[in-house]
Amino acid sequence: MSSRCGRIEPGLEHDFSRVLAMIEDAPSIAICGHTSPDGDALGSVLGLGLALEARYPDKRVALLLADNGQVPRIYRFMAGSGRIVPAATLTADPALFIAVDCPVLERLADGADVLRRSGAVACFDHHPARVEFAEVSIRRVSAAATAVLIEEFLRWAHIPYSGEVATCLLCGLVTDTGRFQYQNADPAAFACAARLVDAGAEPSRVALEVYQSQRLAYLKLESLVMSRIHTVAGGRVAYSYAYASDLTEYGVTSDECDGLVDVVRSVLGVDVCLFVKETECCHKVRGNLRSKCDLDVSGVAAHFGGGGHAAAAGFTYEGSIVETLSDALPMLCELVGEDAGDLHIEL
Image 1: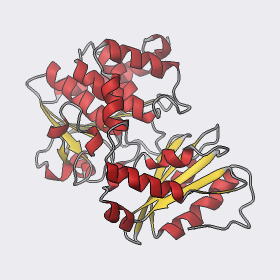
Image 2: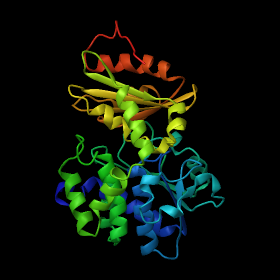
Image 3: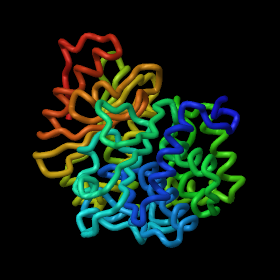
Image 4: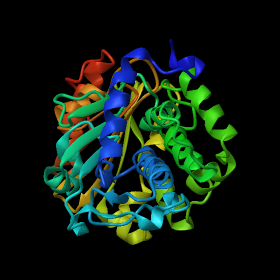
């Protein structure tokens, strides 16, 4: 059987059964995604959490942020987003902790402390994992998004879900496929999207809220990032950057900047790209990598302790923007088969 036809892969059914048993045995459940959450992490937390609450009204379900912050503005349209709280504020010891869209314990940030206090741990994820941290992991790296696995699990378990839940899961799928423009937009992704829309998901609202409701301040910052785009390796590698002072000057928050890497990705002739953003002036840099071909950028992210997929990955670098580019760009040049010996970084 194949999930391309809306059926569940036989290898997953045993793990689905184990996770369902864990859910049914747990009076309290905490669900958490990775640090600096994107649409898939948040959509999966909300989609799974709201569906479980509706199916099991007697259970206590906590929806958590790995960081001590807020849900990014563009994702607050999703049902239940106002109930998500920082993991550090949860004092209870859940019977079950479910990690979503997170391949390593470190990326759970404050959520890792809640995990350690929990009676059992399960995981839904589509990233490759170096070491499994959950008792049961629903992991399929070929899945376009973790939201796809959540939808398959709910369907297999005969747990009904509302149009609001479907919209949350569709947001995860749309954002992790780059609006179905990335290489991971396979037949299974489109089949899942069709099922979600049939269940009441609103693709037009996802598009409006996530991609067509940017603040003017953000668009001005985007213009600055565009003006800083440079290419190396014969035009096959592109990069750009934003300083912490830029975000302050334009009045843009860090969580609004996830889409800036796609501006760099759009350059004609580029195979791979890097966007780096200073999160703490001259001390910490967040790097976003994208590939427009069959080259795998996840290895570059993994080198810096990050991770992701072949076409989209990210990492955090302890240092300055110049130091980040100096370390990462030669690796990208090597990835595209170009000599980085005479690399000149322009800022």
